[in-house]
Length: 326
Ligand code: ADP
Ligand code: TRP
Image (tube, rainbow, N blue to C red; front, top):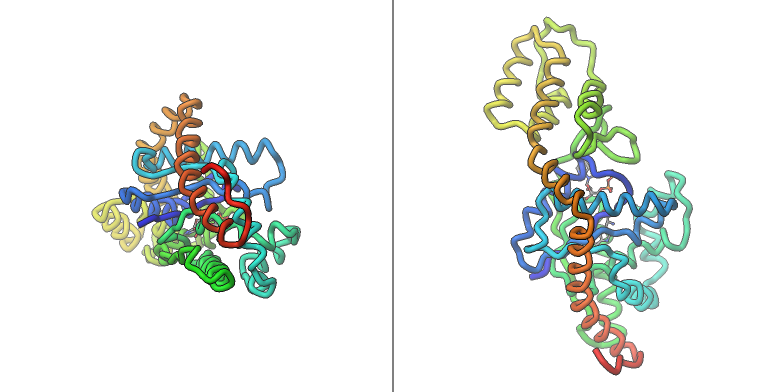
């Protein structure tokens, strides 16, 4: 069984990305057919500064390895290192109905936010379908916001198979990641790069403390008892603390006499300790850039070996000249 997912390098990863996607994905990696890639071609639809794209891509690789993605178990690669994916995108594009793409919420949302409605943004789901179909993926773990794109992938695959009368493309299934884990940001809204309310996983210590201290709270006086379940500092604390630590802090909330500053301090300590091992691992990888590059190139070679087989099948199905050597 092949599990595949991708994440766009559009900024430094934050707590929402970790608990909502990365942690859950890494937990699936002991499946030996696990593919994970950094979707740099997709990021081009929004990141237009080449140096920034390079930095985000490198940071994404470092973050993923630091957080426990094990290259001995999972195949990690950069999307753009597998050129087969762009050829498959074109072949899929020829069987994709305009009306199918017009229905996509992600496209409509992005255009509503003021992102240019380029053809790349409009056909983003076709590149995503190619990402998935190129490797005969069975399971695609994604957040709820991406489920529609998996449906589109299935539609495109079915249409291709029906036009060319054969089971050339393998239909994937979405595995929806824990939707209840919606991590709140500094303002209590969903943490998201586009809301500017994020706390990055690898913030430096001082900056982390400062950000946590800036979390918005209500004006309940220090003496008053507080409801931990109505406080997003406590919601965040639960992500990092043991059950005993959680009950202890909840009791402090309910007893009164505790200001939010104290809860923020507890959150800072728990979060800092939680990513301690990952921080060390990140520093080790950062000091070995050529090993990092090797991991990505080895991953890309493995992905390409599979991708070339599938592409050959698809090319032949639609009447393109088969390669003379494979
Ligand atoms: P952002 O909203 O910061 O741009 P992305 O859309 O790139 O983040 O999200 C990448 C992955 O992280 C997606 O699978 C998404 O579901 C997950 N994710 C992002 N923010 C959160 C959050 N606040 N809570 C839970 N999951 C999140
Ligand atoms: N569109 C996905 C996101 O924004 C990232 C992505 C690109 C992806 N290609 C993919 C996810 C293929 C799963 C499978 O989160």
